[in-house]
Image 1 (cartoon, rainbow, N blue to C red):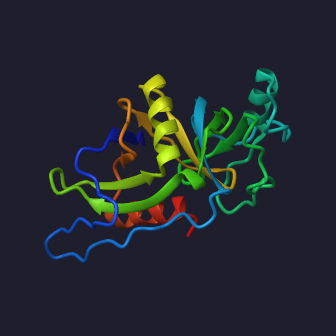
Image 2: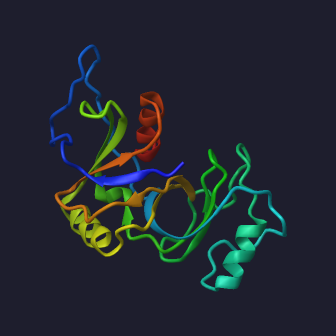
Length: 200
């Protein structure tokens, strides 16, 4: 499933909540531990498949070693990750989306959870689709606008404890400190993703 990052048109303003008729206003989530959440560019995406080689160094800067790590990395759900949040954000990372089984080679992190001030999951009243709204700090908004402006059409992985939560494609430069993640998920799935992004 491809998830898209869109420049937010009607996002939640700081301190305000959107309401949908018949539903309670969402409370949103504050990122609990900013050191465990990272935003990393997607360098390579590999479709789900079993591990076909020995486990390899998942934080190598050598492309051949990265490919070996992708082939040897077991992405099975429920299996503990030996890195589990001990990855070095300054180095590339081989990881996966455990729900989908997709494996990724990711570049060094450029944002952390400390740059996110709030995460909400709501129904978009215009489309009826579930969306996740992220609000960035002032410094996070600056870095996010710069990165998205230079990487339109590319994917960015939202990584918690070395595990890819989602890897949406950037649709346009995103300025203003607010962004939306859209995709084919239900509101409960969107709320769970927002909770996961916040580390809850």
